[in-house]
Length: 347
View (cartoon, rainbow, N blue to C red):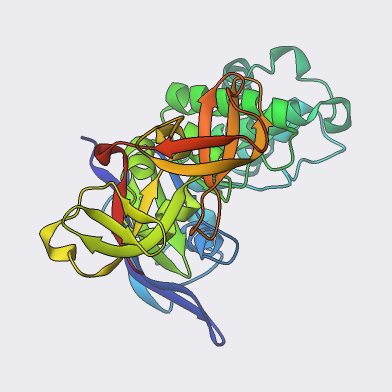
């Protein structure tokens, strides 16, 4: 396992009455793609700006390779930030945009040319070196912004909502491109996003933030399958959440019955929430809950079915492969196995 490159320890930051960061601690490993994920106002951008040197915490420490990063002025940090807007110089060619930072450092012209040529190849921009930004597509402009950031060979590259300006198809292509580029150049990437799919597809590990606090840090699969609390379960992907009282045989829900799940001995008798993913729920279960199909939404490869069950305040969601075997208004059963549901305590 790679050693931590960055250590953030008990970092807090206030803006007036608003606590943007509240005792945040996490580690970012050398060479990993790390995502800061959360809703607007959760503190992720403030944390990114602290790493870049545009903000300073009220308390706590940040180290890079064991050295105090907060003591280093922004322009001297081995850290680069790719802005959400790309911020390309419109009057400069692609090659000049990329070389600008190296020229400011007064590197030898031969070295600049060599590094720019290498990064043009890596980013798939070789034939576009003489073009201006207005002659490029959104995906190409994003590649130029990335190339400009990595040509300086930072230890840490910070990306603030890097794909938000792209349409859905180009965004999907650039997610693959971004991952390939990160592996090829070997730089540690930290991406800020509120897009769960983006974080899940790009990152080696994800820190989920809410109200300035870290709720969970994990790889995408365990984060999805084993959320640490109710907020993460609700925020990451679609989930069926049902509240009741934990008992030895499952979750007792008034007016509904006993829902199958594993119940730890310590939770028996307490109020709890059952979480089961839509793809884990089965339609047509004779021994499950009886319901009526309230909605059928076809997405191409999958269909999302909403089943209204008497006693529940919202329909249960079911994801099936291909077209749905049920129609609107049809009566059906829904169910799941004990191992497919998680029991979460109240936040």
